[in-house]
Length: 104
Image (cartoon, rainbow, N blue to C red; front, side):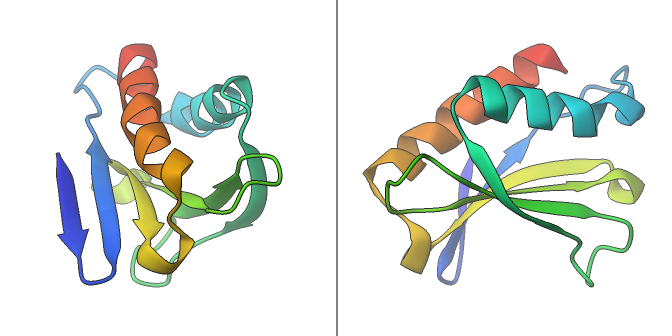
């Protein structure tokens, strides 16, 4: 499901109850790399203690996808800010969500 949060679109990635949370970080990196996405930022979000927040770009194309994993809240989501959206980001959000859910 796509959810608009002000000037941001967010897609929740479903984490099955049986998923090994220790594998999520590695899975995110491998899946994004396999899809041709390059990580440009890795940090955490203050509002989600212990989270890992990454920015990904696709070559030299305009646009950025953000991926956040919050182990403590058992959440994984993909976001795109309106000022970082482009033609590839909308399609990639859906396909990346699908890939991650298959692998989890």
